[in-house]
Structure formats: structure tokens, C-alpha cells
Image 1 (cartoon, rainbow over the protein chains, first blue to last red):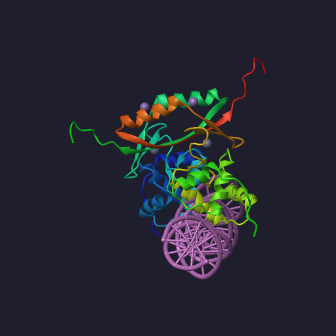
Image 2: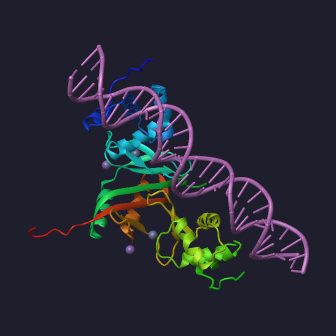
Length: 149
Length: 149
DNA sequence: TTATTAATGAGAAAGATTATCATTTGCAAT
DNA sequence: ATTGCAAATGATAATCTTTCTCATTAATAA
Ligand SMILES: [Mn+2]
Ligand SMILES: [Mn+2]
Ligand SMILES: [Zn+2]
Ligand SMILES: [Zn+2]
């Protein structure tokens, strides 16, 4: 009966600009996504969305992330572990890669123009245009070597 | 009633060397894998294995690829599309990456020592030791530019 | 050959995602 | 403001891949 009030997020505006119908649920999910700076999966997005407006179903979250991804608003990531994870495309930072801490699972973002260029060149020299790079590295925190231990 | 006869494959020997019990099914799956130079998923491995010996179940194929992967005999790949795909670890070629043709889905392997080194350095400079690199690029075949067309 | 222990087969179960369909809602035209 | 209609939603069934269960079978060592 009571509609929650919150401002239109940048993603909600994007949604409109693409000519997508801006439903209450999409507005909520867009808000939640704009508010996130990590890589939530659908379950986590659902939890956050319900906080904002309980009148939402997990099915709609699945539908909406797919829609947003098809429209270039979201990027899907696969860090292993069975569930797809999402982040805003071209949020405040541009293209980037992910380092996963092998022990904690923590995701650390990084950019590297040299890597961008190298991948582009490799693919071009094979006679292709680069469409998508799917890259994540798993690493283990280095134990700082001591003088004597 | 009739046991199919085929030689022990390199992978079957590896299986023994690791102290794993060499069952008929594992011998068959090892044979099929040694005979493959592509990136089959479990369903495809099952089809190939049944050709060699019908007395095999898909459950055992799942179990065996997991076992082989845990023992460093197989590598699991994710090219998108929902199913895990497998290839022999350190077959005739060493570590390599994969380029997926965006239109045909064809998988093209490549090696690149510069890329190896760059990834290693990036991760090291972030304070980590590189454990695993998960990389595949999707590309579209270049249309050769014409002088006039 | 026998005993022991692990592996297998068949199917149930699990986990993630998509499909179905009756109902509701956004939105554009009255 | 109402109306009409296509599109979206909620609830849940279905699908798809992978793992689990458990009674039966088979591999290895004594
Ligand atoms: Mn940078
Ligand atoms: Mn090389
Ligand atoms: Zn990211
Ligand atoms: Zn390969």
C-alpha cells in the first residue's frame, strides 16, 4: 500500500534513456545497483532490494539483471562458485580486471593499459577483432620475506 | 560380458602413478581423454566413452573428471554456456589461453610468454603470488579491408 | 581365493536460472 | 482523470548441470 520514496538513480535514468519501461521494481533494483560498489550475485541483490521495497520477487531480479545486461547497463562476471555476479558497466571506473584472493575470496579490481593493449594485439595478430575479454586471476597474499626467520 | 580391449593410455598410467585405483571405467575415460585434442564437456566425454565401452554411466564420468582435476591430470575450463569443459593438463603443449570465435564458437588455443610474464608481474606488484589465471577472449574474424569496395 | 575397501549405476536431490500463466501495472491516447 | 493494452510481475513449475545416496559390483592386497 505504501510506496517507498527514493530518488531516481543514474541507472534508472539510463533505463529510461534506453526506452525500457521503468517499473517500480526496476527503479528499486537500479537504485540498489547504483548504490553498490562490489560484485553482488542475484541473491544478494534480492536481499538489498527487499530492504528498499519488499514488493519484489527474486524472479524479477533475475529478469532485470538479464535485461540490464542485454542493454549494456550491467556486466555479468564469473568468479567461480556457481552464481553469476554483477556490476554496473562503466560505473565510476572504466574497464578493469579482477584479482581474487585465494584464501578470503575477496575481489580486488585493477586496471592495466599494457594488458589491454597486449590482449588487443594478440587477438588482432590472430586475425580477429577483440569482442570480450574474460579474465580473472586468483592469487595468494605474499608472505613478506624476512631477513632471518 | 565382453571387455573391450585397448591399450593403456598415458593418462591411465598417470592415474596409476598417482596411486588411484585403475578401474575399467577410469581406463576408458583416460583413453578417451588421451585421444581428444579439443575441449569436450561431460556429456560429450560420456558419448565418446560409451563408444569404447557401453558399461559406463554419466555419473562416473562426472566423478572421474572431478577426480582427475583434483589430481592435476585434467584442467577444467569455462567458456560460458553453462557446462564445464575439460582438457588434459600438460598434454603435448604447455599452458595456453583460448580465443573463442564469437560467431562459430570455435576454440582456438594460443600461447604468449609476454602475457604470462605480464600477468605474473601485475599480480606480484599487488602483493600476491599468482595461483590461477582464468582467461579467455572472444573475438570476431576480421574482414580483410579492401582497397575499394 | 578371499577379504576389504573403494567405485559404480541408477536415480534422487541440490543449486542456479528460465519458463509459464494468471494478475497487475506503466504509460500513452483519449 | 479514465481507459485500454501491451508489457511486467509474482508464484511456482520446469529445466539444466552437477552432486549425492545407497545397494551392488569390482579392484587390489593378503
Ligand atoms: Mn589504469
Ligand atoms: Mn609460445
Ligand atoms: Zn569489478
Ligand atoms: Zn585448451
